[in-house]
Image (cartoon, rainbow, N blue to C red):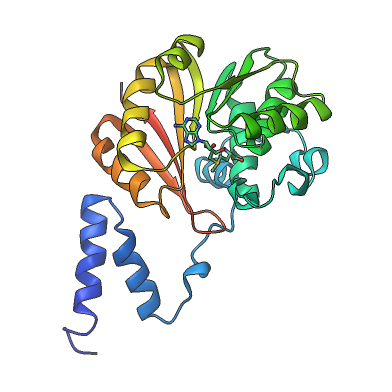
Length: 252
Ligand SMILES: C[S@@+](CC[C@H](N)C(=O)[O-])C[C@H]1O[C@@H](n2cnc3c(N)ncnc32)[C@H](O)[C@@H]1O
C-alpha cells in the first residue's frame, strides 16, 4: 500500500487523537468510506461495567432490575412524540449511575413523560439514601403524563414535578441550589444548552455530574459541549441509536 493511501482519513484520525475531540462529520465520513452503516457505530457494552472491568475494581452492589420493573417504555410513549423517550441503554445507565453514586438530589431538565425519571426514582429508592428527584418540563401535558406514570409505579412520592422553562427565574428559584446529578435533555439547541450548562454548573455538589443527551446526533449539544470543554472532564458514550450521552464533571 502506498504511503498516501487513506492519507486524508489518517490525518483526520490523527487530529481527533491529538485534540481528543471527535468531529462527527469526519467520523461518519471515515466509517462510510470503510463500507459500514452509521447504525453500526454504537455501544455494545454497558459503560459502567466497561469502566469497572478496566479498573479491575470489586463488583458493584446490584442495582435494581430496571427492565423488569419499568417494562420496555411502551407505556411511557405519547403519540405522536414517542421517539422522545431516551434510548433504553441511556435510561438504564443513568439509573445505575444514580444508584451507584447514591445521588440524593437529581434534577432532570426536560422529563417528557417520565421514562428516564422513573429510572432515577427507582435508583434512589433502591439505594435507600433518601433524597428527591426534580422533574421539569415546559409542557404541562407531558408533565401530567410523567406524574401519572410515576404514580402508577409508586415512584412519585419522592419526586417533585415543576412546570416551566429551564432558564426561567421562577424555575431557578424553585429547583434545588445543590444538585448531585443533573440530566439536561431539553431543546438541544446551541445557545439554550450553553446557558443551561453555565446556569446549573455552579449548583453541582462536590463530585456531582451533568449528563448531556444527544451530544453526537445534535449539532447544538455538540457545539455547546465543545465550547465548555475546558471546564469539565468529559466522557461521551455512543448509544444504540447513535445519539450519544456525555458525562461532565467539573474540573477541581
Ligand atoms: C427529548 S424530550 C425528554 C426525554 C426525557 N428526558 C427522557 O429521557 O425520556 C425533551 C423534553 O424537553 C422539554 N423541553 C424543551 N425545552 C425545554 C426547556 N427549555 N425547559 C423545560 N423543558 C423543555 C420538551 O417539552 C420535552 O418534553
